[in-house]
Length: 68
Image (cartoon, rainbow, N blue to C red; front, side):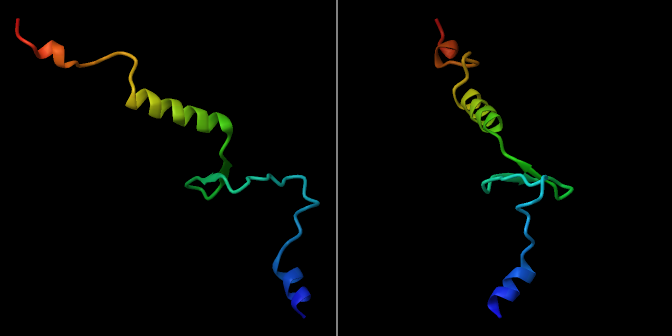
């Protein structure tokens, strides 16, 4: 009985050519479409965070406010 219930509840997608294995990492857009998160997306996000937290060019420094 349980095996019949399981086979009716879950669709077998192993034969489908459109199956994408997301490994649980996806973004759902506003249309409900799942977009897989790629390693390039992760690298870009890490770079943006690094650029925000540790900018290569100093915008302001304490020395610029010192009077001579």
